[in-house]
Image 1 (cartoon, one colour):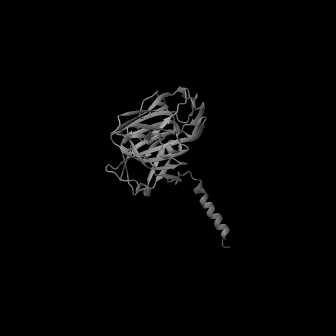
Image 2: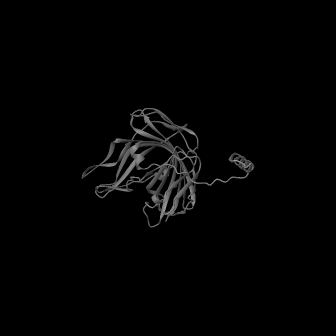
Image 3: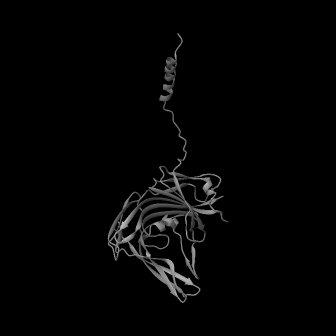
Length: 320
């Protein structure tokens, strides 16, 4: 009797079972998972802003805060807890800081001179009273804007106060150490129109870029696979900015990828790399921002407040 299809299937299965039961090592190809991403072309202001005949120098802090102009427009108030490390100039530097900053967008600063009053030099900052990060009291810092003009004598504008701890890349304050996976409590007693408040935010893992490497060469006609160590926060941003060689800082963000990745990698597509303007040096700053974010409301403050804890890693790349 010829073996039927059933018998053939059984014999085949019996032959396959011993092979399946062997403890042979299995290697899985490591392909980056295609994550849904939001592409943002930042509407950053120029670093030099001219109002009539008056020049105001503005500094970007995207490499220190992970915030772009759209964030600044959406959230007049910010409460930040941040860890930053940078691989620039052949050495790694790092800093940690926290700040409370509440802008009153209904109170624009004015400059009065012989030719009238000018507005648009910024806003006033509101006091919140004695404030703490966990049990550490914030330093209170006065926000001062200095303006030089061809027709006016140098003018100093006192714009109010903000609260900080640690070194934010601009000014040294009372030192703090960033603690990953820690529930931070930011509290204040309140002052003036601002009532007392207490906010909590969980800090994400510290992230460290694995690819690209510092001073790495990136080709526009190839997808850039960005990998990092450390569990990502709720939101991950990859920001490519022009670079100020003299100051060793990001100058102007050009493109942002924003995602909530399930893995420790994102793909920066070649078609987007080709849209980044060229420059003579070919060097750009790449910033990885891993953050947990909340939107808060404060008693007496009419606008939304962004509460963010973030780990940031900056490095330079050469884009060809």
